Image (cartoon, rainbow, N blue to C red; front, side, top):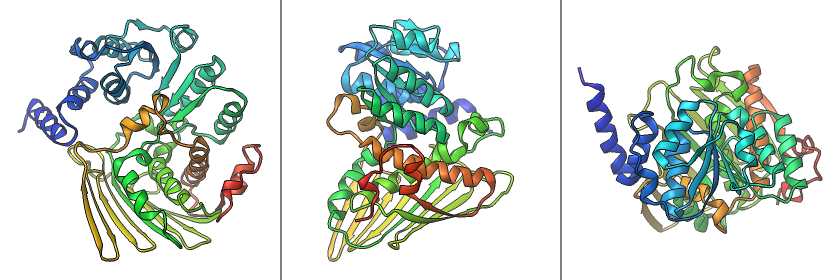
Length: 385
């Protein structure tokens, strides 16, 4: 029998080969919620201390905390989590001087100018609205909303307030997608996109299973729906779509499923999320694209091959780059997403989540009609070019 300690060490070694040792140390610290190395936050403690973090789980420590410290030297001034132990352990690891008693305490802190939100999915919108009302710059992890009413409130308040709001959907920020764009800008005609995702196995009592969290469509599949909307936006997002959903287990409809979208222009997007077993290092994804004269294959955002007629190019990405760093750094960078694009992908995601919840396998979807539900002026960009 292989011991848990040996498997943990093996996983750390594998992580290091994928992400590098520095990030692996943070990943290990994020999973081991006791006895954190207290010096992590002090190694890179060089910049301003003006960030508040809501949500102190694995992602908050190993992705947001890691990126802010090692890429910017920014220090988290205050953190909050409904799980007090999670907040205290993150504060210990990253040298955060203050653990807030409530989210309101953190948001109202005059020393906090930027609020990062990485809490449970159903709470993202409410925390974002509170931070926006307080005049803070807001970075909200995906999904930005898990209900249409949440999205309506977020969209309306974002346009009324003068604060900046950034979203944590990261695949469009990956080096592979940024490299791919140069190959596709002259693409004419429909796109074919296939995403095959081997996801985490979730226990029946995992918090993703809570109906208030929006299913795995919001928790996971939204990533690839958002990527599809981003790619299509390069050359014009078609308005009308047919959505087909097939699942293998009617009792658990949000995993081991296939989602197929076809547009009025002939675009074809297929997303498969399977969780029958879990890759040892975690999630693994393969993306294939054909568009005009361009064919591309992305292997887990570690390698990409692109063909265009007689041209062939191979890319290698070490460490693996899913776009987390560039996405998290949006408040300090000129490389930012158009938040309207994220609102569009969220409308599509919520439609598909509703199909899964209600057991509907076939629906028509229109971006322009969905946009009207937000009560906002008609967006000219929604029209097909």
